[in-house]
Image (tube, rainbow, N blue to C red; front, side):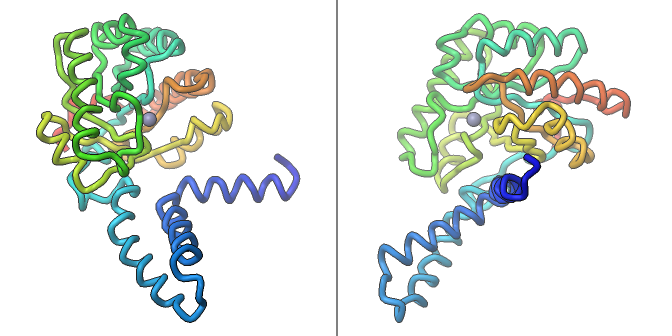
Length: 263
Ligand SMILES: [Zn+2]
């Protein structure tokens, strides 16, 4: 990590994660240019096409845009810890920690994981945490039809109702990616969209202390923190969550479930 080249690569990668909607659009522009407008004289048409595509696509990938349906990105107060992509074999240790600390969190679960770990889903609900819908198979919903989107969400609603007797009221699109029809489909299933305020990118495995600093550095009133408890080993997330809880408690910050918010 100390040599300049590695540092530069990390910086570019971090910039891309922070600004991935712009990186995504720049990529689309270059692709569009080379595929459809190879003649340099026609470059202006390429950029016009990209501007148009950008206007349509950018709100699909930018978690803070509300053009295709409203989403919750922040609460009025406190801090909400949210965990995506579980449940997994790492979830019980996380639940043990939350129980010991008396903290409630929201778990956005994937249907295929729910199938593998139904007992953990029951435990999440029994211990007072909230369950959210993170689709059945974690697809990129930008490229899914309304029918596929409905099936992805409906399946998880059914699974959670069968296991806990309650249906989720919140959903979170995989990668935060939406399309013009995702929220209308979700609304018909009684689901409100919740995204996040802080994404400390624990999926990069940057080290527990880096995850903690990324959250503490962006801390503000009512932030929703995006963490993960599935799809890969989550030892660093567990360690970071322990430290985060201690640091937030020191500042007398209240932990909230999304359901408690009137934001
Ligand atoms: Zn996810």
